[in-house]
Length: 211
Image 1 (tube, rainbow, N blue to C red):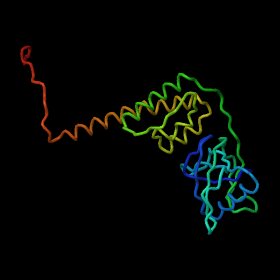
Image 2 (image 1 turned 135 degrees about the vertical axis):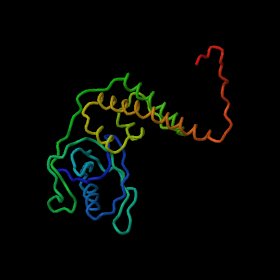
Image 3 (image 1 turned 90 degrees about the horizontal axis):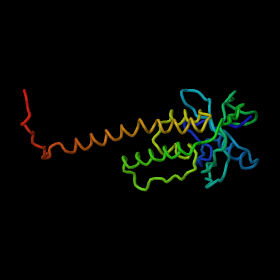
Image 4 (image 1 turned 30 degrees about the vertical axis):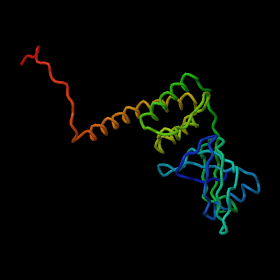
């Protein structure tokens, strides 16, 4: 049985997650992780249910507070599905569950990585983001997922995909929809800003005009 810390967030393998621990049950969880060197799971709470989540390991306790609270850094490792959930593990304050770890079906494709990076670059230009993050090939989809404006349900859907090729295609598809919307918003902003200003229109040529 894996200790569980349900949250309304998505954690990906390889991702560092800073957490402020304040509830007594999770203070106990972090104490157990520190003393016994055990991992715990963060299942994403979405649509009023728990299904997919990510196992994490406690990497560092950055700060402990007098009342028992703490700031910790965890690292995502493996994705799982919750088979059975229990509000309390035996003898503990925190929740737990029977889980099934999931494996990916295949590897990645450099062509898809390159296409994804090109679209990310276009998005950042359109959003005029200063000092955008830089990604080098090879990379995995999880490394960029939090950096392209996905909604929570989209981040969660990515978590459920068991193929890196599927994930790369999903992110590319998201950007192909998002970029035109951002471009249209930028165009609308320019039009709004032009209202009230003098406009320079090319005169019409009536030589071949017919009514």
